[in-house]
Amino acid sequence: MHRRRVIRPFGAPAIRPFAWLVPIALAAVSGASPAGVLPEDRADVLYHSYDGGGVTIDGPSILVRKQFAGKFSASANYYIDKVSSASIDVVTTASPYDEERTQYSLGLDYLRDRWMLNLGFSSSKENDFDAETFSIGISQDLFGDLTTISLGYSLGDDIVTRRGDADFSDTIKRQHYRLGISQILTQNLLLGFSYETITDEGFLNNPYRSVRYLDDSSPAGYSYEPEIYPRTRTSDAGALRLRYYLPYRAALHWEYRSYTDTWDIASDTFEMGYTHPLNDAITLEAKVRGYSQERAEFYSDLFAYEQFANFIARDKELSSFDSTTFRLGVSYRILPGGWRFIERGSVNLVWDHIFFDYKDFRDLRQPGLTPGTEPLYEFDADVVQIFVSFWL
Amino acid sequence: MKLVRSLGLGLLLGAATGACSIEPWVKPYERDHIADPIMSFDRDPVSSAYIHHVYEAREGARGATGSAGGGCGCN
Image (cartoon, rainbow over all chains, first blue to last red):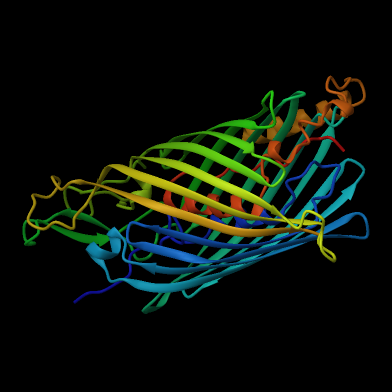
């Protein structure tokens, strides 16, 4: 029996295994504070768990940040994904598997007057994918510190290999260009704007995934062949965020993001949330997020025949679908009076329930149905974060 | 890409020419609400980085998930 892995849950999303992840990790270690102030000294220990669609992923994330010499702030992040996958792709075309990914990230901020320079490096390793990313950014406070502008650039080089195929090795070069603006509009209203262009060049497929096509000679009525993606992709995303301080001590936030890319994927993301401190010790948070995506031009759940086009994909992350998230979070303050070198701390629990509803990706687990008439796939996922934070 | 470059250049030029002439309409002493931690775009970076990780693994979109690199501007 032909057995091969198909999907890596967080590793092989729409395009390439972990290529997209490293800049996100760099975001965690890069300062998100105003340009004229170094980020707070802080240590976070987080346990994360994802459970949905036959996939479980969990592991730790540790983030430490410390100022030194008055003008610098250094940060380090250590992150692990422990994956156990029997996803819809694995069940229908491959065999379940376990694996682990480890990532290290380092960051350095340098403050001079109202300018801040950020440098970052991140490395992610697993058995068939290595990613390294360098990042540089600069930000400045303007107009009496009402405005913060930031510009950033990341360069990533990845090496893609394939288990069981010693002859296969390819590369990906990634570049990110970022613009950010944070603006105080009134005494109670903050606005944030982000724009990011990403270009990829190289092997952008998941090397394990395949498409299906109609095949009368097969008992199921269809057969599989490997996916073929373009070797380039450029995307543009712009997001607008508002945060409003209510007449009592609580905050509302809204967010909208628009996304397009050269594969014809287009999406809209909406988000609205509420943060409410009950007292000095407990803060509650609730959020709703909606995401709607139009498929890639070369995506199809079922192609009419073998080698239908130059580029073919059946990766459900490239399909048309909606997802909806409901979040509840609670934060409990600990050590209010401090302890030794710790100023204060908090214990946090965040739970996200996500529902995915696919419009043109079918569930093939029920045999005997006419190809193309299978039920559309859908699943729920629970994402839990438990973390402890200490301000130093 | 062009948009990013144009915006970046325009903002930097604006900053160079206007930073000294624009009077802040929200004074530093009026920013206690803005400076409250509940107003932060990214209160817990270790947590927000993780959830962006989850979304980008499950969705085709990517980018512009950051907090604009800014905060309260209330130093």
